[in-house]
Image 1 (tube, helix red, strand yellow):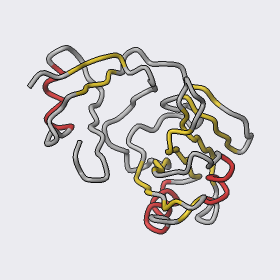
Image 2 (cartoon, rainbow, N blue to C red; image 1 turned 180 degrees about the vertical axis):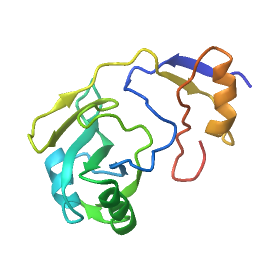
Image 3 (spheres, rainbow, N blue to C red; image 1 turned 60 degrees about the vertical axis):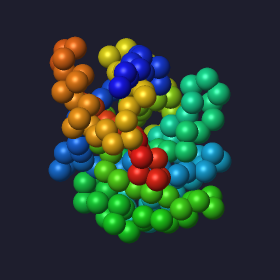
Length: 169
């Protein structure tokens, strides 16, 4: 099956395939388009100290992508958030949380975003030309299947396959 490959124009720095054990960042999905970084931060504070929040946005439209990254003061707080806030409602939508597999320094978003930490303010991450998007994959394709194929072209830091709620890639 032929696959489509292009530069990832939404970009971002990819550091690791899986979140390290000391990762204090959480990926939050299913956010309302109206959810701001401050609203997300306020909701996450019920677990403990939040160091930084990014709500990812489409760089062309400025509209939320419906997901964000929350960095807690410690990995234990991040794990507590994942355990206790799964399905918690923010702006009328039940959120989904998982360990952030691509965390970098707080404030360095993977796409365009606005965010704030203890200092507040927004951030726009530059495009990363070393990230690529692969399309037309079989629904059964996993990151483990994709990695060796991409490694034929050179060094690969990570490969990730995104899944729909139905479980299909």
